[in-house]
Image (cartoon, rainbow, N blue to C red; front, top):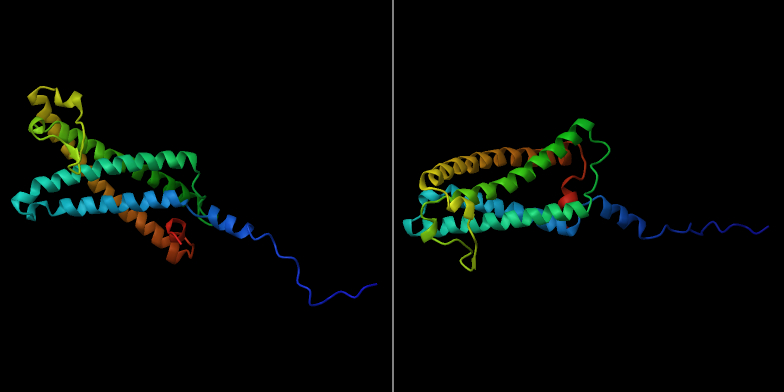
Length: 207
């Protein structure tokens, strides 16, 4: 009977198993890129408009036009992110999370998507009802003409004024709701990362 070689190592597992498991526990590269690009654009747009009262008069109209352009860009990117998510299932939440936290996370994500979609839409409607819209064409970054909503623009003057005020209010309060959701989103991620010791941030970070 042959003597077993005690120095012989057991056969290693297929090298693709671990990378596949790691890959499946994280978002895809496209999802990460869209997530961080949208987050940075929204943050920049909010900060830019916070200081609108402190800009020189000559800057105000270009800043507002840039704010609109970024808003439309965010709208397009979020729609792209939703389409990508439909076709690419996101990684499941860790099994250690309580069921209530999982439900809250899904609800918060759905509400966040809704708010990010509604913010540029309400801004677009608000701008389309602007009384000076016919004399100040809208364009993306001063390069690409962008249409306003014809149904809004063709309303009587009084109706347009009412819509202009109403959708400005919607736009403003949606921004306040976005602040609250942002704090909740970041707070939950940090809680899972540092208190629950789960690799939460790594799910959405490259590298």
